[in-house]
Length: 235
Image 1: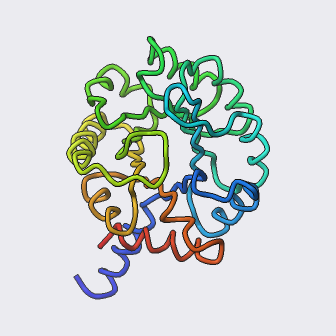
Image 2: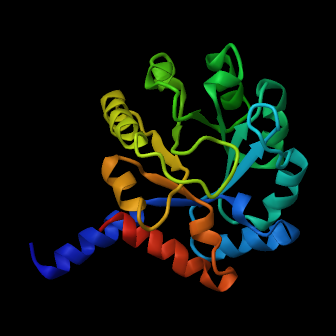
Image 3: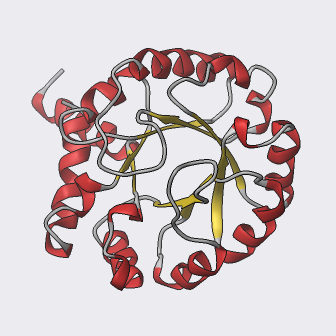
């Protein structure tokens, strides 16, 4: 393969990697501007972490804030619900502008019903696996989901270190997705930076959530940070 073909293959692989910056690491005093800035900087999605202080030990935002942010986002809102229960709030987040709604199977007794409710609300369905959640919870859900989110830290706070054991889980999930024949995104959230991005992508992920790694350095650095993550992931 010639140099030009190598470059084209590298650029194609970079383009296949989706970046979804977590606004948990943004400046909350100017959140609308921050969302607009990361969209202008070349992200693919805007990752919105919703926490209730009950399912996870932190409080963040609700549907009214998501609704206020939506006009500032030129990229789809990737809304991760770390709340319990989930079902009563699906419609509110859908109407607020979420394109993807991701939930945790532990958040309610009927994950299939939750997936169906998200789909009925007009959103793509995501399901998130905590570090200790086995992949077997997906056995009867693969036909109903559009995204699997692997938490490579315990959910609740940004800035945590990557949990190495999740690489094997990512590999297992990639095999499950390929066997299903469905177009399911494999997203990873937690400790994703220029050092871990390559290993996560090599294990089979297609989408990276990056908070600190995106927002460090301020708005002038966002485009550089996003590009650096893509480049790191294909090394």
